[in-house]
Amino acid sequence: SQQGEEDPQALSIQEGENATMNCSYKTSINNLQWYRQNSGRGLVHLILIRSNEREKHSGRLRVTLDTSKKSSSLLITASRAADTASYFCATDGELGATNKLIFGTGTLLAVQP
Amino acid sequence: DAGVTQSPTHLIKTRGQQVTLRCSPKSGHDTVSWYQQALGQGPQFIFQYYEEEERQRGNFPDRFSGHQFPNYSSELNVNALLLGDSALYLCASSLVAGNSPLHFGNGTRLTVT
Image 1 (cartoon, each protein chain N blue to C red):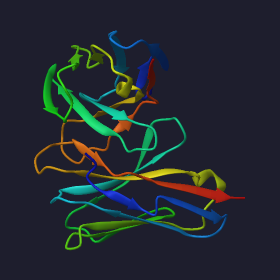
Image 2: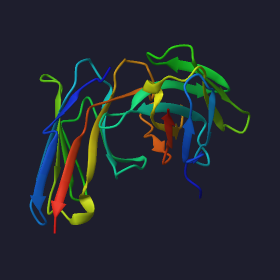
Image 3: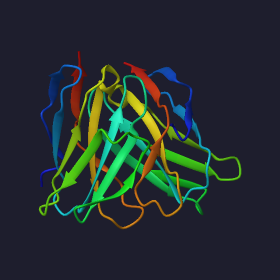
Image 4: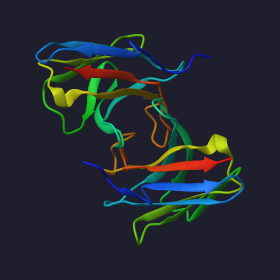
């Protein structure tokens, strides 16, 4: 079963705009990760945020984590056509289950040139 | 530095048959995990191998089995194929240490007819 859900399921924006995706999960976690998947290909790791962190930045990416609400958000600033992909959050759904990631249902992002 | 490689890229099988998928991890990685991704869904954890042993398992039947070799490469075997086994099968490698991001291959697209 999926650990969490991303919201929205699909998002269409223009190049240069910001894109925000949300993720909710169900159990206590050690960390939460975000991955990107281009159509029909493998997932690429974007960023990891630990349970004791509230915000993290990496280039044009900004991730927040609210463990009290069991939710996270991914912000992509100044989006580009190349950002078009599906984005998944993933948690280590069981404490101590090293690298056993539970993925959400994904957000399909389309960036129009 | 080669990343994760999977073979074959595509496979068509008939119900009841057996299939073997192969994965070579990223250089330096010692842990291999397998995921099943149905169309439009997030990846679902099948199992994880470390030191040639299955360490963790998801909610998949015994028809799904695997193996890890001394060079860390891995195989996923599925017996008595069902139509519902049609999916993208993803291999991911990592270090056994916690918080290590997963590196994914591009997957094997299995179609069961």
